Figure 1 (spheres, rainbow, N blue to C red):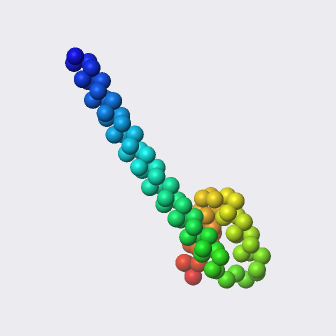
Figure 2 (tube, helix red, strand yellow):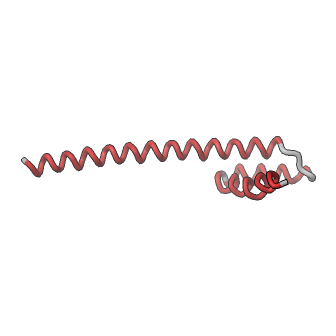
Length: 83
């Protein structure tokens, strides 16, 4: 009997841990998606010296998703904040 009760406790802990993990992953996914959308909007609104720059950045952000958004953030957005 004691072994069965211990197994149920471990099983319940595993379920709780799994639910917490899923909730963290969902929150992280929502954060990444919102960040991606914000970088895409910033890219579309920004005025560039050359018109082809906007097209290139939109293509980079759309096709490389979060990696493109991170590259855009560090190359364009952070550089703009320093000015």
